[in-house]
Length: 418
Ligand SMILES: [Zn+2]
Image (cartoon, rainbow, N blue to C red; front, side):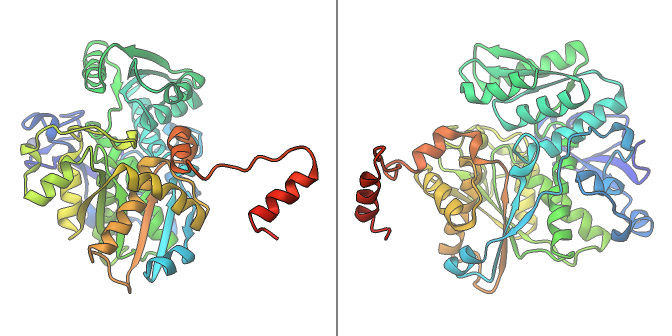
């Protein structure tokens, strides 16, 4: 059933309130830029739920704080309760007190997007809908395909025909229906909306579906609980459509309203220099509904977004927490992949390594003090993009040896290994 403490939707832009049965996706007054918050009666929730009541070790541990808390709707794949990894060597090298890596690449399809897909699929089951659609070229689509496969629900995914084959492979293996659009991601997005309206398919598109934020907020819940209900001073998150940073903000906001944490962390959003409209908006004080479509040129395809669908909530997340938006170049992103992996053991995809590159920028810019603790959100695993990974280590390839041990001895001597 629906959480009894869930009260209404509120537009993140105009603050108009809507009854739970009055809207499905975005604010009817504002249109696509008016993404919706799901609002709870925090006073009542605070009396009814305490941390000691949480049970199970997946994202559904937080069912009392989610819009749907009926286990019959939860898909069986294990999503969430990903590890929080200490990175003391990196922290020491960077000159900060503590660094934590919230490793969401451990989710079943390899990215944080599994949290949103699981939440949306639970909602579709509650609504009695049997087909879900989405437009995506990457992790969100794979997450939807995987979660749908776990319960036998049909996923219809619109992808640009020119999408990299590796991204499409995961969808096909999970058995999603993949419609290859002869056009751009924007064209695919528009078609998925039209198909949703025409056929009554439930649309998972990031940001426009408010349940995506509610699913993603569970990463922030876990981060706080894993730190014994403390928050880091700063959370650094890479940003494309803006829905992940929006989800983290919502998670911290919920816990703060409940009194489970004492303060909100500062949220630092990191964009690729070739796809940076939110950085530009933040630097120039531009309102979310005045943002113009920008570029999409970056190696980090998961954060390539010309007009971020959740721009309203993403800007709010940074502005309300005293955070910042930063841009990093593709070269900085590539350098960040091995730098993070070699000093922590965590192998991130380019879009996620961007957060580490952003952390370096934030330190240079004096946005983080040496006595502060920092968490990085590891949003997707490095095996998602082998091409990007290989580029990041070009020039440092392996060493060829023959079948005889002499050539090994020679290599060992040359490399001064012994
Ligand atoms: Zn509105």
